[in-house]
Structure formats: structure tokens, C-alpha cells
Length: 277
Image (tube, rainbow, N blue to C red; front, side, top):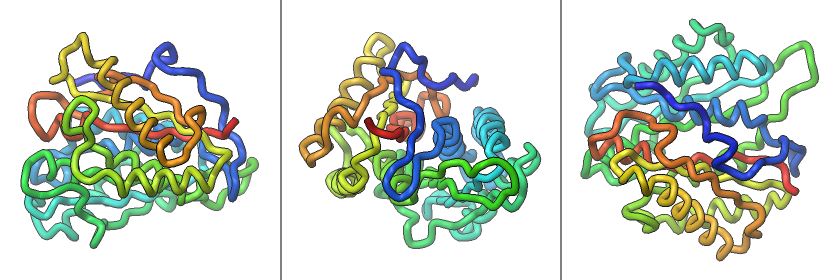
């Protein structure tokens, strides 16, 4: 399956360039997109080495971005669902993580710039009683970190608190058109708290759906979902002009559609941060 390019510019409002923020600055958009590409890499069921069909393309794109910023490192916090892991989840996470690390090294990313951790007690994201929940539980949490490098001025790296904000928004799942699944208030509250503490940051919500949604409705559905999340953040005190919605439709699938697991990972929000105003 071919991997689509990022959301076309025509589908979203233009975003300003990265700018300094309180306590640091936000990473270039290209690096934030690389982090999402790594987060979206999937392993085949019960495997620690075989990637889903588009995994190699995602790694290619992420490595290309990382090679352009030699003073930035990446940490992969791996997750294996306890019910579907091919072995002890702790071992599964480290094996999968080291497989991805070696894949990036083969793509000319320096070894000391790629770190691997297991999720440990933070493993479960969703309930483990269904296949969709297990698929969500294996999403990779990716963080960007400064890396010592002699050369040009250091690249901006988003403060960890703001990277956690991006992760909280990634955890949101939709049960129907604009109804969030599970108990989203905690993630929304944490996201709003971080945004309120960084008033000079704006966020673009890149919202995607699965191809099981009718083709004529995909862009409209993702826009409604993005606007719903924006309204929930506005209700928590965040200025509406700091939250922009990019309706991606089905333009960037993680895996081929057709199963509950696929829908669970293809329907997602990828938050990209920029300086504000």
C-alpha cells in the first residue's frame, strides 16, 4: 500500500514557521512529522521483526528527516499489548524497539541518536478486551531530544511537556462521528493545562479517518471531529485562534483498512505545534 504524503496545503490553513516559546522552542514541523511517522510504524501480529505493509516507507521518511538534523535524537517508547504479544511484553517491547533502532541505523541515522525504552507500567492505553483496543495499545510513543553535535547552531526541540500534550491528543479515539470513546476528559484536561501554560504555542490538529467511512464523507467527518476537539479545548479556556483544524480525510492511512484494528489506528489526531501568534 502506498503511503500518502502529508495533508495537502490546500486542505489546511497555512501555519507560521516554528518560533521560540516559553522554556525553549518548538521543533521544526519536518521533525514533528518524522516523530508521527515513527509512532505510526506497526508490526505484524505476534511478530517482533515483520512490519506492516507501509512500515518501511514510514521509516524511510523519518530517517530522511532525522539525517537533516544531526543535533536531534529520538526516543522510542515501545508498547506490546499483554494479550497479543508473542512473548513477555517487556521482552517484546525491547525486541521491537531494537529492530526499529537497527532499521534507522541502516538508514544512516547515528546509533547514539536512537534510544529505546519499554512502556512498563504505562503500557495500556485502551481496554484490552477487544482487538481494536489491543491495536491502540501498541502505538509507539516517540519523543525528540537534544543531541550533542559540533557544528551549526542547535535545532529547536519542543519541551517535553509540550510533546506530552501531542501524545495526550493522540490518545483520543472516536466511538462515532463526533463522540469520543472511553473517558477522554483526563487527556483533554491535561492537554488544556499544558496549552494554558504555554500561551505562545498554537496547535494544528491533523485529523484522519479510516477508509471504512464513505468516501464522500471522509473530509467532512475529519473536519467535524477536529472542530469538536477544538471546541472541547476552548471550553477548557484555550483561545480558539490557537487551535487550527486540518481535515486529512483518509489521506494518510497507517495500515490497510478492513478490520477493527485498522480503523482503531487509522482514525487519529496528529498534533503539530508552532509558535503563536
